[in-house]
Image (cartoon, rainbow, N blue to C red; front, side, top):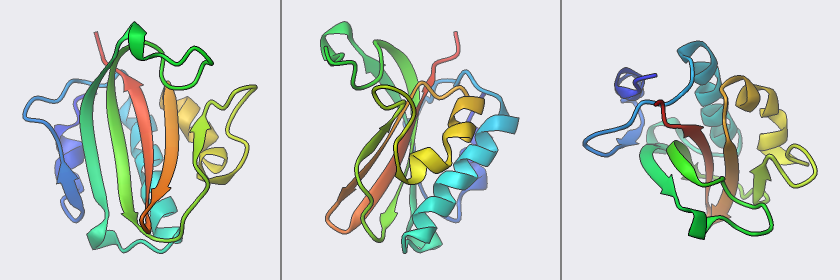
Length: 141
């Protein structure tokens, strides 16, 4: 899926992206609802729509970067989408979590959408009164 139109459609948020963004191996019918859930989750935690940031990045995870304990995305090329904003903190979590899906929080609530969109890895982080939800989609070959 080419993401340029999707990013333009979210111009009501702050949008960050590289000059040349890779295609993601997903379908718009699965990614659009997932992105909506990611945005809604940040809003539910106190974020303001016009202050949210949507970031799209090309990410390469090398074999050296892969955590031996099975944490983090597997080596490969990904398109990462992050929604970041102010709001109440949420516990840091990953999906899939070791031993299955996310155990609590937003990733558990949206786990069906993550799977439908073909997300390979996702995480939430909280810091300095802000929080992020990030998903990794495989780069389309």
